[in-house]
Image (tube, rainbow, N blue to C red; front, side, top):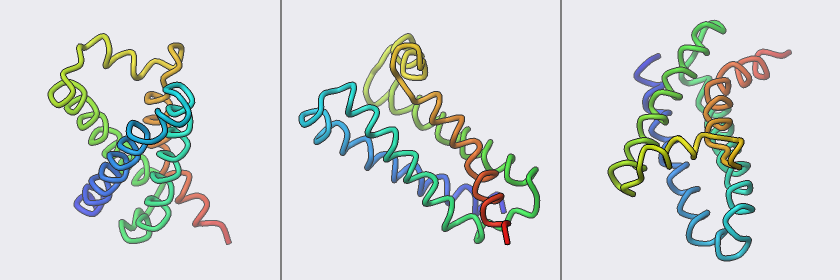
Length: 130
């Protein structure tokens, strides 16, 4: 189950990289930076939940505890990748990286990470309904 969850995490990471590129290359010019962030948040969350919806049966958690473990793994992988890209690819300072997670400054990455953590539980619950 853990290996499958890691595979899904990297699929999600790929989807988020594509989403980020679309935001920077297309949405910023068309809608402005702030609106592009909000649109990208919605599309990014949609990508995460769609991938979760279609892959969670394959990962095959047996309980809510399994789902929380999967969500924590996805959270950790995405957090590490976000920090790595911000720090070493884009050369951002630690204060700018911290700002990206601060909803009080209009940034939704922290909110998105919490919703990523909860995605397996939400999807597991929805898919368990008769």
